[in-house]
Structures are given as C-alpha cells and as structure tokens.
Image (cartoon, rainbow, N blue to C red):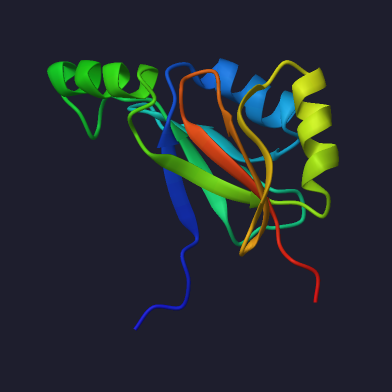
Length: 137
C-alpha cells in the first residue's frame, strides 16, 4: 500500500533558533524554507539524504487554534512530546564528544545496546533525539 515515509515533523518554538541548532550545530541541511503565508514550511534533512525530511513546525495555524497551540508549546518545553527522530552515525562516541564540545544538551552518553551504540540529546526546545551507531556487519 505505501512505499515509504518521506516527511515527519517535530514542534519547535522558534524556527530561526531551530534552524541555527539543526543546521548550524548538528550539521543537517535545509531542504525547504518557504513562507506559505499561513505558516513557514521549514524542512531539514541529513546531507545527501533527500528522501527523508523533518518539518520544523511551529505550533499554531493551520493545525492549532491559539489555546491548543499554547498547550503544545507547554508540552514541548517540558520535553513531553516523545522521541523526535533518530540519526545514525559511523562513530557515536566521536559524535558525542563533538556535540558536547558545542554545548548540546546530552541526555544519555554512548551506551552499548543490542542494536548498536546509542546516545541521546535534547534540542533547545526539549525535543528528544537519539543518535545510533548501527553494529558493523
């Protein structure tokens, strides 16, 4: 029935700050940054990976009325929105050290798991992100 998931989204409280974090700090790239009038369509992706993009969505129209948008903002700030997404890397320990040196909030250091080596971080808004080094072979 379906072929793949192409777009997912996370809520951010400030799209310019999100752009600085995801592109400037994490090294992702802008896929699209379009003013649609009723909202800003801002998507990012891993460089060289055009088939999977993440919408950095600000709570509000067209999906939320003012009261709902405020509730979503409160949940985001509490870190209560669950896992945003998982990134993969060839060397999670090196990635950990680089991100820590940049001041990124690390929630879990590199840990050996059945599925590889895994670490956690949080964006400036409270969203949880995982970084995984899949096992070799």
